[in-house]
Amino acid sequence: MDRLTLTLPEAHALLHEESQRHNVARFVDADECRELIISEDTYAYGEACHALWDSDLRCSNCSSYKACHARHSQKKVERLIQTMYEVESKPVAIITEDGSAIEVSLELIDWHQADDFELATVPEKNNQNLHFLSSHDVLTGLLDRNTFYYTVRQSLMENPEQKYLMISLNIRHFHLINDLYGLEKGNEVLLNLAEDTLDIIPEGVHVTRLFGDQFAIFAPDDGKVTERLNRIIDQAKTKVYGETIILQVHAGIYVIDSPNRPVSVMVDRANMARKSIENDMTTRIAYYSHDLLDQAVKRQRLISRFPDALHNGEFVIYLQPQIDKTGNVNSAEALVRWIQDDGSVIPPGEFVPCFEESGQIAKLDRYIWETVVKQLKAWEGTPLENVALSVNVSPKDFQYLNVTELLDGLIEQYGIDRSKLHVEITETALIEAADDVDRIVKAGFRLEIDDFGKGYSSLNTLKNVSATTLKMDMFFLRLNEENRKRGDIIIDHIITMGKQLGMQVIAEGVETKHQQDHLFSHGCDLLQGFLFSEPVPVDEFERNYLGIPDAIRIS
Ligand code: C2E
Ligand code: MG
Ligand code: MG
Image 1 (cartoon, rainbow, N blue to C red):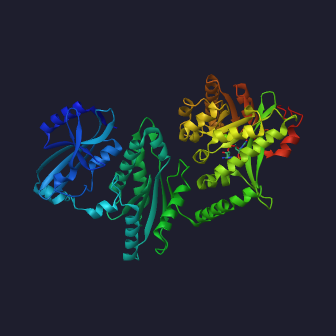
Image 2: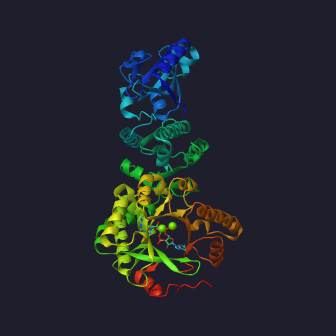
Image 3: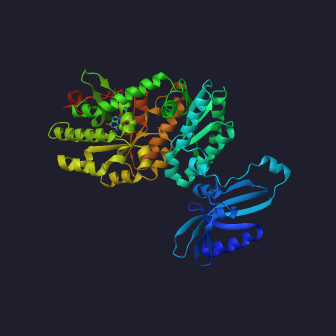
């Protein structure tokens, strides 16, 4: 980002200086398409920017808009009849007399008579282009959604013999760039991806930004598409934003098998292909297949069956014990299972992501948390009364629920001890809903960072949140002989770091005796994993541990 911040006198002085060097130097408010007249102590809105070009309309390719919204200088060269214009737009924040800032662009414009070469090669600036303005995205200059759909249909109808592809492009975790580095950084990323895409694809291929970071490309199937997509993805990777962001772009391709489908369905299918690899760091391009459609239908079925299943009590908790060094079980994790009416069990990995997408996860989690609190209540006065239970909180829950208020309410309603309800949050939630997570800690709940190490910014998340517990993900533990040594070193350091930060450290996914010995000997507090017990129904858990706290012997 190269935005300047200037007071009114500084802006005034800079403008004076630049006016000596350029044909025109001016400040413009690019959102409103107006010049800003600056004096040493005040400012006022002036003429429309495009009046300079004798036009009534905003420029088709407004470099100042891009500069302001991406906070990055932009340059363009355009020809208007016989004159070449060079425009440089620099983002500036002007601090006005009352201390507020206006985001403007400092436009430096020079012109000269076009020579023969320029006349022949530089396309003419078209300021009367009402059609362009009403059909393109101002930020990226790509087609807007409606025009894209219209143009795709037009091409399909005009060339019925041609084979076409619909491609979906998306940036992994784009919202994090907005969240961590601001909207303008996000805009810069979008702008660069749009420019790279336009550079790499041949003319006549239609590209749109449907919304956010969702791009679609409609291209003839000329056998070179994957090569071009790989170039676009590589190009995106070479640009490093902020301190550490490396862009991971994923593409999904739908080979259009029938031109008679609605364009929206073609885009859906390309999206479906892309989404099938969005959590895969090694695959960048995926093709649509009917299997994906089957899976989508299956997901849809789960989503539509959810209300009845919840009503019928088909969601139950299984408990997985956490073992301390002496073999005692003082806590367990509650994990949801969907037991269908035919007795078959659906694991959460199959439905939690669907419900996260549909938003139903909040209803499910609220129900599960209440079930867990009721369970804690039911154990009062039994040998299991000191056992604490942890619940999982989806990052999506924060969009629909006031999690802290809800948990508080449950504790109060059932009159249980707050220290017995532990709250598991993933790193994603820590980043996306830091304030909400903070509220949980402030309300006095034990907060556990789940799947630590699995995410992309594990270490970063630790500095801001005072979580009580670190749950190390089993990803580290699933290692072969070769990299086990290295894995062990990483694990040791995580444990040491957690301890130095005053946190409890739990390892989950413990499957072998070697892991158990290594983890305990390096100071890990609790272990959870198949080595001790799978998650089991509540009655089985009670049978296993009721009255025999050291039922699990560590040999
Ligand atoms: P998680 O919270 O990280 O839970 C640990 C998962 O690891 C559980 O899978 C557990 O069965 C599995 N696991 C435990 N020990 C071992 C082991 O030694 N080896 C292997 N390979 N796996 C082990 P599960 O129950 O299928 O749950 C998967 C994920 O679903 C959970 O991961 C959690 O993110 C989510 N989930 C489960 N219950 C809920 C819930 O009530 N609400 C929400 N929002 N998410 C839930
Ligand atoms: Mg968990
Ligand atoms: Mg976990």
